[in-house]
Structure formats: C-alpha cells, structure tokens
Amino acid sequence: MIVGLIDYSAGNRTSVERALAHLGIEFKVAFEPEDLVGVDRIIFPGVGEARAAMEVLRERGLDTALKEAAAQSVPILGICIGCQLMLDRSEERATECLGIISGSSARFPSGRGVKIPQIGWNQVDHRNRHPIFDGVPDGSSFYFDHSYYPTLADERLEIGSTEYGVRFPSAFAENSVVAVQFHPEKSGKVGLGVLANFARWRNESC
Amino acid sequence: MLTKRIIVCLDVRDGKTTKGVKFKENRDIGDPVAMAEEYYEQGVDELVFYDITASSEGRGIMLDIVSRVAERIFIPFSVGGGIATVEDMRRVLLAGAEKVSVNSQAVKNPRLISEGSAAFGSQAVVLGMDAAADPRMPSGYRVYINGGRTATELDALGWARRGEELGAGEIVLNSIDADGTNDGYELTLTRMISEAVEIPVVASGGAGKPEHLAQVLTAGKADAALVASMVHLGGFTIAGLKRYLTDFGEIEIRNE
Image (cartoon, rainbow over all chains, first blue to last red; front, side, top):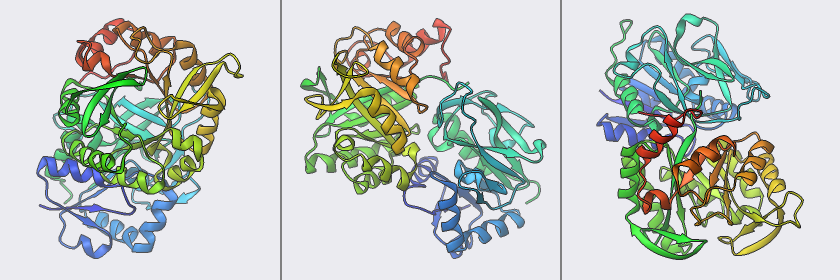
C-alpha cells in the first residue's frame, strides 16, 4: 500500500510526511499526475489560500487527476484547504474548486464573538459513524487553523461537526473521498489515529 | 467550543534550552528536543521555539532542532528569532514548523509580515511583540525590539492593529514588565490588545502560578497562555496546569 501525497506549493506537505513516516505508512510525493500512477490512495494536504492552490493544481493537471481518481473510487483524504477544494467553490477570492463533493466554503462571519482565523483545538462531534474515526472518542479535540469553513449541499455526508460561531461540517465523506477541515497531522494522538484509519480504510465502493 | 491553548516556550541558544529573567542572564536548562517530547506527552497544546543565538551558526543548529522536533511531535509549533526574510521563513516552515514568529525584524521591515502571509498564508505568520508600560504612548504601552533592549516609537495597540492589517494570523504579546517576575501576566495590556484585534492573542510573560493562567484566559481575554519557567524550573507540569484550569470551570481546555 502506497499513499500519493499531493504537493502543490512549497511547505504544504512537510508535517503530513513526518506523520506518515512516524506511522510507518509508505508514501510518495506527487507533483504531477504521472506521479500518482500506482498509488493506492491519495492524501491532499493543505495550507494556504484557495485560489493560489487551485491555480497550481490546474497548471499541473492535478485537478483532472484528482477528479478521475475520485471517479475510480481511489480513497482520497483532503485536509484543510484540501478539504475545501473538494467542494464546488470557495468564497475565498471567488474560487471555482474541484466539485468532487457538492457544497461550498464561506468565510466565518464577523461579530459572533469568535476570533478569525480559528486557530487551535476544537471538538469534533461524530455524525453518521465513519471508519475514519474508529478508536477516536466522540468529541475529541483536533487542531484547526482556518478562516473559511465548508458547507454541504447534502447534510447526510457530514461525519464530523464543530461549533465556532457557526456549526459546520468539520469532516465529511462521499464514496471514497473523505475531507477533514482540521489537521490530523498536528492533532496529537487522535490525529495520528485518523491518518492510520485512512491508510487501512476499506471503502465498500472500492 | 474552541479550547484555550496552553503553550510552552523554549528559548534556544546554541542548541540548548535556556531561561533568563527580564531578558538577561540566560542559563542552560536542557535539550530542546527531549523537552518538547516531554511536554507533548503531557498534553501541551502547542510549542514555541525562540532562537536567541542569532548567529548564522546558531541558526543552522536551530533548523536541525526544528526538523528533529517535527519528526517526533505531532502538534503545532512555531519558531522565532532572527527571521529577517521570506527565505528564512521558508526554511523554518520546510523544516517542519507550522508558523514563524517575527518580532524586531517586522518592526524594521513591516513588509516581512505581508510578504510572509502572501507566500505561506496568514496562519503561518505570528507577530511577536514586546511591550512595556509607558504613559507617554497613546495606549499607555510602548513596543520594544532587540529582546526588549531597544525602545521604538511604536504604540503597542497601534502596532498590533497594523500587524493584523499586514496579514499576521496571530499575536504573541510579551509584557517586558511582567516577564520573569512570576507575579502574573499583564492583564490590562493583554485585554486591551485582545479586544482590539480579531486575530488570536497569546499572552506571554509573568506566569508563576496556575491562577495566573486562569486570570489571563478570563479577565485578560487571551486566547492562549504561554508558559516557560514555571514548567521548566518551577515544579509545575502541563498536565497539572490543565487539571487546574479544567477544575476552575470557566475555561474550555483540551484534555486527551
């Protein structure tokens, strides 16, 4: 089993690499679609800004590669920006995203008594029990770092829910695609648990 | 609910953790990588490494420490000290840090904040500020640089707002007056800055007892409390501090 780790800008993948190495999960870094040949699953990590990320993905043809992988039921894990880019669009500089899962990302509203960006540890309440959270207690805290949050067209896809001025789906899944707004690679032991679960996840639609 | 963060700060000089009082007289107290692992095991929410060497040789050692830390602990950490260019930031982030902290260099060249946040996102850029009471300033507090040794003409409140506008994702606010006293954080300053900006504010300087953390996270309106000597040398543990704050009741705390 080998994980393809999408690289679309300097610095976005270092901590995921370190976490995978720590867990003994084999991976290769994918800069372009050819690098994804032969990988069994894909992690799409993210830090940064939606439009810049989408531009790099399009330039390198990784947008099409990700859509094709999803269509072929390759397990994909999107993290943070990688989670938001799975949706149709983001309010962040009005960016068209991958459209693999129906929904969009919006900026946290001001004036709700919360700081923006959300930086720190917040609870994720389980919804529609998903194998990615096997062994992770309901309500565990994960590390978040973001100003935009995902919204779903179909709420039934929600697998984790978090409150930050608004309640939003902090984790969602459809077929072979799982997306998490938090950073499992920076969420201590529960986060490492999510990454390990993803590496061994057997999706029925595969 | 977002939990309040307890952050441990490690000052690193020539590869060793040191601790000084009022920015003076540093002495070595341990290996930063081993200390980071210990605090991670105890459930610390985040770590800050501050390179006080500032020689080019020291910076090389620091990058090696950053990458060893990143291999062993899986919580966010930031690195500050001597970061003067976007390239310096990139090296630290590629070595595995989540965030870079800029302080004196941002005062000298505010574009460092805007260029850093454009390149890496504002979540990666922390504005560190050293401030001390000064009745001549509009907010009552003046910004200092060079480890607290050099006064600037910047007002603390104005500089915090400017830092937010420039794209800093977070402010670490250190009170020079409180630092090293163990008498508690500077609550007036912390509350003023935290209410003035929308980005999170980390209170630093003065923690000596668990009550001090409770005060700054409630009355001080801080989003996170930074501790150093009280856990390095003062006999308190992160686990103990978190138990205290959980029992205190008004504060959301992450417990594994």
